[in-house]
Length: 521
Image 1 (cartoon, rainbow, N blue to C red):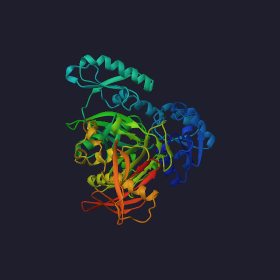
Image 2: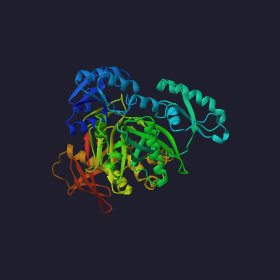
Image 3: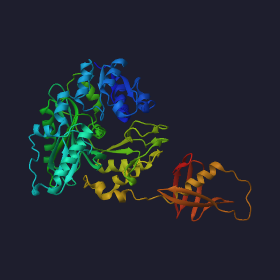
Image 4: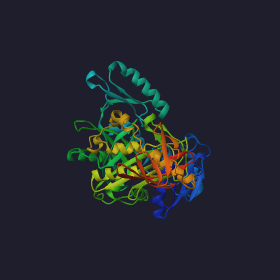
């Protein structure tokens, strides 16, 4: 029986695994780089081991150091999380060679599915050996790795050789493996995947489908379960293929089989990810399971039930990043002053109020998940919660998420992987609330000023200037016998934290927070 788990990862996934371990009474061990010394996952763990340095190559990618850390801290099992070493067969072997329990699939299964060409062979899918005009467009793809690296779309035969050369070079640099292959390119298809879970007794669960079509640069932004609008035939085909992929390599543990579905409803196998996925919470919400708890039970040798539990309702997840989608998705840094969502929303995060968002690692702050009886209700609930969330600190993609969820194409489940290529400019166009600068100014005036008796002569207007959505806004207001006034707007209430304004007969409530020169309204 597992008594102590080291998570060979950081941030949100480490915190998420620790939560399940605590509920099970299992001791937790964190590893951390120098940049993460005070990170939330370190603070939550029962014990922590330093990996000297800040670069991933010197810390979280050093399997030898992580195994030593597990032994030194008295852990008897290792959970890899996702990313870093989670799909590294050599690391899995090093863990078991050290006498520790590996909470993941067998190394042989990891190796078999690490190569996309080998995975296709196991499923009887042949790559394109000879490309003709009739095959175009095609995709040149690295056999190892992912994340969009080592990939090139080819629309003209004359460009194929150059694309192969460039993809090989990028694949060698990113993955140390220059093998590439060619497959049909599905233009603006839907990205649909199947969650699987297998035990050591021959049972394989296919826990429904997920749609992850809203992506930027092959990185998922919004995910949901189940994938909407699939025909019963296609849904059954995807689940059957996923189970067949798992059985072909004697898979154990949690994994994901990914597909592209074209406009004609045909499924094209992409790859199998031999780990837990970032988007696993939507599956947990729909099936009422804890996938990490099930990973632990499988690793201990327990058998799954013959059939998975029934699916209920719909779940949607949005990834909140410290990044600016309007400026090339540039990562943002700085202090996260506050992060809070309304009740009823699941928030998986690796940071909390007061944490510093640095430059060394992925800028994802949190995943927000809503579950409801229907898709429309889940989407509405998540959009509303994100809109009302307090996200104070660096620029984030929060507004993009809200607008994406409310976009007609997404609401009607007609989205595909080209969604942001078509709509990013509109989704990131500035749309500031014209009353927000006034609310900021009035809250600031209340917090800073005290006034004596009023005079009969009109006072000079007070002037404040704020930069909002990249534009400067000037605010003018006056102090009168009846209180603060602004042109065309009645000030119902104003203090340092709350301002209520009435414009055209409608009252608007604004909560205001100030952090030095930064004001959040």
